[in-house]
Image 1 (cartoon, one colour):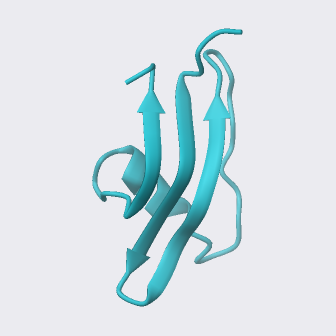
Image 2 (cartoon, one colour):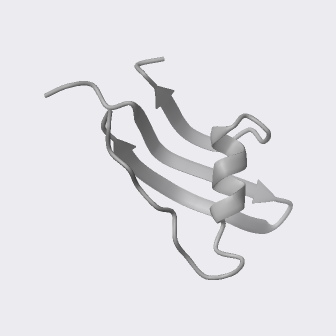
Length: 67
């Protein structure tokens, strides 16, 4: 099985007492297309900001192309 292009394991982000993203884990294989869906305030934008490097996760690991 090929190494995933993106792997998140236990990613969490807090803003003070507010937990914006809580223990998110998933992986995406090369060539796959996914959608991030959820209600308002569910943490979609915060998760994308973590992936883009705008925010640092408070916990968990992120690997992109094995790094």
